[in-house]
Length: 168
Image (cartoon, rainbow, N blue to C red; front, side, top):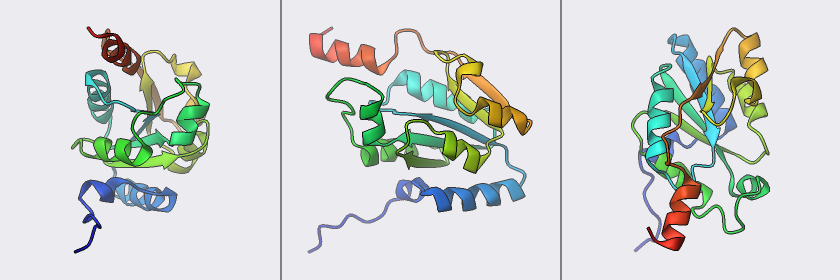
């Protein structure tokens, strides 16, 4: 008996840089509009889901740049973050039907990934002003759109962690 787990359909949407480039090239040949966002997505909650749904509606394909475990730690989150490792977080994201691809990146920002993908739409949450979004200048220079989407009030990983730790 083997302990290996069969590759699931969601695994096929966790891509490396070369696979992302190939997918983007195919989607562009079909005329698809590429949307890109990034984040830690440590504990997926309603705010994340609504944000990602709205992002997906801005185009035909949604690609998520997922911060690696090391990059999450460098972002200065709590010492015990991330709670879920990068593969677990990627698998949860790809289980969402409106997510077309997830790529784990180890840099402090997704700038190189944005340069490689060249998205038509670059999206972040409402806590980011469009001019503060990493890669906004690159996307705009290509004629793309940069959006800061509204956050769901009271719905954040930090709030959820506090609620769990202190009851509530």
